[in-house]
Image 1 (cartoon, helix red, strand yellow):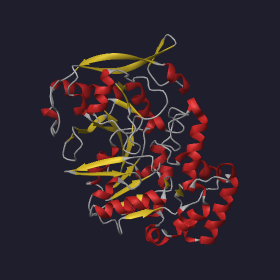
Image 2 (cartoon, rainbow, N blue to C red; image 1 turned 45 degrees about the vertical axis):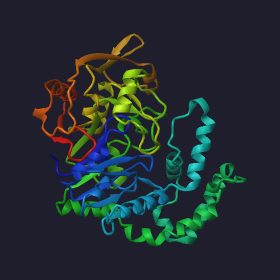
Image 3 (tube, rainbow, N blue to C red; image 1 turned 90 degrees about the vertical axis):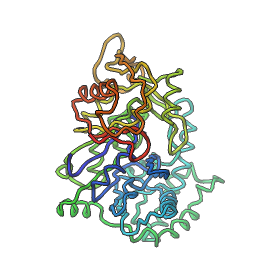
Image 4 (tube, rainbow, N blue to C red; image 1 turned 135 degrees about the horizontal axis):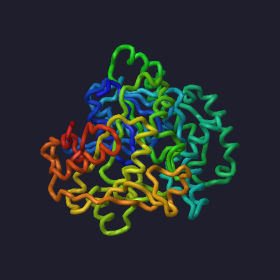
Length: 424
């Protein structure tokens, strides 16, 4: 296993990255989050304790680990404060272990207002946003009038930038009775957080490079999944950041020499939240069974996830664009009661069979899955901790996935708890 490892979702998010990061953080000195915002929900179960984090790296739960939030993240300061309070309530001390980039752009209340208005305007063409203001915050970042973490420590500059954004967004803000449009109130609330955030702000790029020189082991944590990447995912039904390995480099300010291994997280079946093409979607009793057994409801929104069989075409795409070396397969136990398991090996598009994701991602909505069937194992795999102790048909299913993708399996999750894991 590589000393410095990237953890990337290989599907449409919700692959179980939180648990994987928590597990692998035990081997690392440093854990860093590179992109996304509070639209991501990473769930970790340790014994009877359940932790749901949206912004703070999952590695914070491991004692003594140093965690960073990079410049590629868009950070909701108020949600971040809630997470800090949550950790404190759970007896987890983050002081001196959690740090933020000064270049991290902020998600502010008016971004959520804009998000809601724009999604409503889209009508039937809605993209299924989480309404957390992520897209509008990234728009401001790219348009170069975003407000960054460092701006909180210069009140005059912060007020000026809020006023400027008020003018730029006047059609959303002027005359609105929504509290989220009140920029003076936003300013006052932000000022109350300054002393809390100040000791956390460091040059993340510099500190990660120093850790590399000192020979420390690092874990780089991505959010969402490859098929939601703003460039290489199912655009426009995507998130607003680069969810692939390239986003790790730009989102943390590190070079490619600092990455030894890329681990892709793959759920044993497929899920998707929100609108957009989903070739293997099951709108039937099987799909509902998987949803219930897998507890497929969003950690951030609570929305039921769309479910489907494993899509090898999408996974090949993910392995290629991320440079995946190894995979961690999650939720194997959810398929325990299925006598037949289908795997999408190809798509049929306009009468032709294709082996890769189409160049025009809009055509993915018209792609029909071509399935191969595999026998289910019809046995309880929950909590199994040895690959050899898995049913032979479960082993065959896992080996099939790895062989098709040309990667190794480093981990198999057989339940939600930390200890319900096979380390290969």
